[in-house]
Length: 188
Image (cartoon, rainbow, N blue to C red; front, side):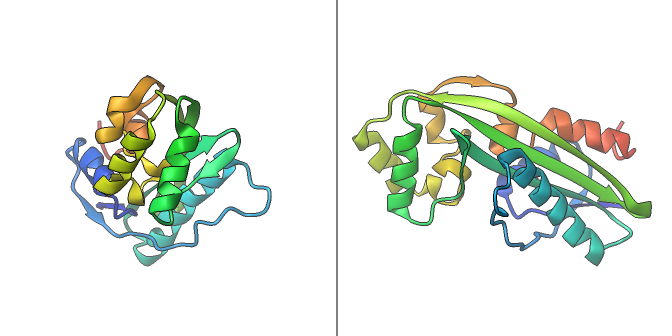
């Protein structure tokens, strides 16, 4: 049996490769819109499991790892920016403030095996000048990232404090992923 990553994210692929387990990539293309009144932690866990389950139904003899990451500022989910102005607006809102990054991972496999873990990290940004925000948006880096930033990129130069999982903020919390893979017998 092999492992499938239900994500096209290059960051998740790089992180998962650290386990030395061969895997294929089969992205799950699903509607990621929140359901009415859905709490952020419920949303991110639902999406991770839905992605894993969607791909598992196509490959029922395989193990499938699904993941989702969201940025939460004062109970509001900040998804991926829709355009440059939206990215700049998100970064202005995050400037000088703390926010949460929730990363959920779900592993599904044969015989209806299923497990899920949630990582909750807190990130604090320094005050971000308009000039810095515009240069960052111009770099293109924020455009496909939840909360309009990549912790492993240029935004790291403005992180004052991170409590939790650095890899979780990147999109795949390694410790929690190890726990799931070990519980399924995929790594030792």
